[in-house]
Length: 272
Image (cartoon, rainbow, N blue to C red; front, top):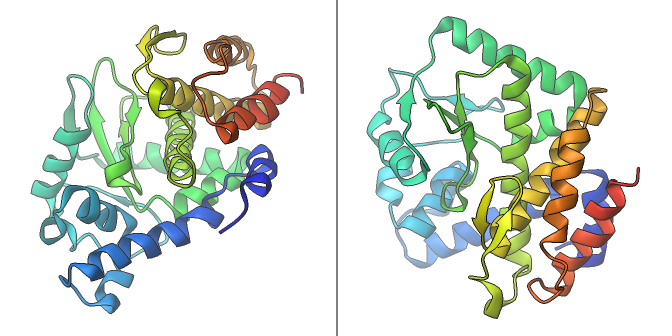
């Protein structure tokens, strides 16, 4: 496992999936093996999504068919034999009124163009999408753009009714959440007595606990990197990230490691 001080250096330049996903998968597989449900050779071929769902939701029988069969994320279609599984997952993840959606050919073409756009402007994010995210679940909603959940790691949820550039940015946003899920496994990030300390979050414009505000900051940081590489203005993101960082000014909510991420990475990035 990479040392925390080395992670700080790495986060500022690249995502850290290469360092953190393999030990995470190994840990999930070991926990399932301890239950003596399935043999190791079958688990090794399972997606991280099915492994995390098994460990955190105790539903391996329902999800072990979601194999990691391709280097390209699997997009859920109407013919998917596991559609009932996806309905279960989606109902667990959705934050607002939304409906599961199986994309048509025109929408799939738009998604493909979003991936090309991502590859053109941020090869690291494109690589991470192909190697870390094994499944993409689409939905339709008037108020919700995208989502992730730590118990269904390796899957991102995207509102199909977005422009190509917006879809690419949403993928970057959700990759940031998945990255912070992993960082939270190696360090608690939030001090236990501050777990439920609610402060107004500029990004969502509502009160959120420290881990929610930290997720906002990390997503804003990665989206800024992406927009800069695409030579787009980041002024709106700059202000929101700056104000999100201010919500941690008390210095009493986060662990030493999380405070270093805030000050040595997010803050410094605003000055570049």
